[in-house]
Length: 155
Ligand SMILES: [Zn+2]
Image (cartoon, rainbow, N blue to C red; front, top):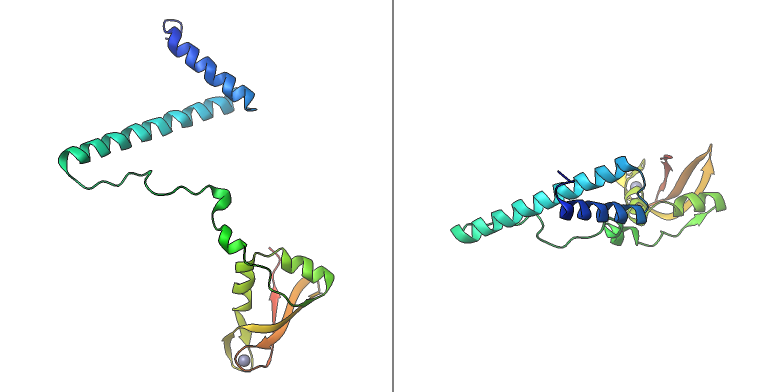
């Protein structure tokens, strides 16, 4: 087929060159990428056809490509941008605590068992240190002011 179709052969050669210059030198990876491009092209064609059909019949249609696309590296970024919650930490404990995303820190501090209230509570006046290789947070219950503690399991 390629031998009889110089235009198609030229396009495929161009694609191979693009992959090569983009660092994809393994033919299997290149085939995988080409397959994926064909899949995406087919998906786009079908979507456009469905849109055209819907326009013709007056039916409602929402394209699968509608909306704003947010690159993966920017998703959930706002949550991770929450600054680290301050407290009194030993240097090693501080390092482990600051490696935890801000939104997770909040979840941890809002998920503390208070023995005085006998129910779940939040921790204030935070301090942390390493005990038996685990990060142990200590502080006071935000409801009753009693002492509370929590272990942060290693992930
Ligand atoms: Zn309490």
